Image (cartoon, rainbow, N blue to C red; front, side, top):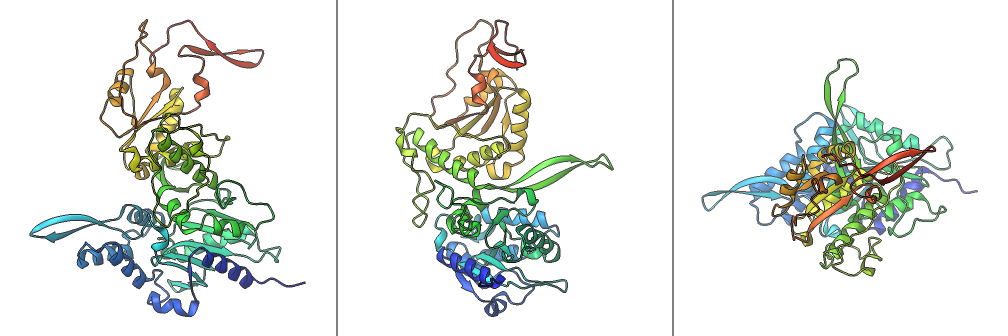
Length: 464
């Protein structure tokens, strides 16, 4: 029987990553490029990428952007990671003089439109020394010199070397060498067969398998999850899409049990595979529903995101479809990811998104989720306070995310006339729990024989 070593698993992963477009950088070549083991960025590659992507910005401004990336302002790991994420996805704001005038612009670190045009590196045994502590993550993926992915491997032949132990090792790395994780987009733990991925703040229960390569069918159980995660999630186009459009830093208020004081807690969340493919399909279907041609994703992006059924419906029918979730599978965040992507879709031309629920408490919950992710949405959502407020919000020229209950659309008193609020095609309505509104505006739920039944009620609907 052939004995399997951890180095075998490492080499297998590297070969798969090379097939996805990454170029291997051996341990003996890493230190020279990094300028020492305390540096975690391949500075020369990052500078070359900045110069290539921003040729019209003066060199001094480009160098200033480089310095900002290398010297993040906080000592807190999560704060620095969020600051860097904003630099990566929104560009770095710079100012420079031209023709006697001060001009503002943005310096970009990555070409998201053409993923394979970036400098893609897979490096193993990536030794980092910080505060005299020496750690060596198994594999690091670097895009334009930036260490965006850290992979920790265990040997599947060792019954004590589990995926959870690889996860625990990643947590130890975060404490010992936090500088490496300032720039992290995704963490991966694997024993060479099973593999799970998660964010910087995710606990073990939130590390999830990536179960498909093409978004159409799940891989067979006999296929190693490590192979699926590399060919699927770590494929450059999907990885960069995940980082840019499917990552949020959700803010939530929590009460300290000891002091009673309220503090803001940040949780970094990344889409699971079912959210990623479903949202991309929903975006394509929405573009079809308004009658626009599908947007191009860049000349080197793949043709298939698991969207083969989108064009089976007629264009311009205004029916984007149904997004089905089981309980606990992340419906609210899927809605956030969908909104964040549809907002920047050129074909949508600055859309207005209307999120509808049928209860005030659901309206508040969903609104709080969106409000906590406003960095991805690039705007602050608005909650309609009354029927009149809703009408005014929907009569605007464009843009915005509006939350309302379905009851605010009902006619007042005996009036059965509905105002025409807008003739725009790019108003997108997301109805949460839509099936519960099918009994009419005056529906009430009654419990009979321990069963809940919804039926039309004749009393006047109260204003919400």
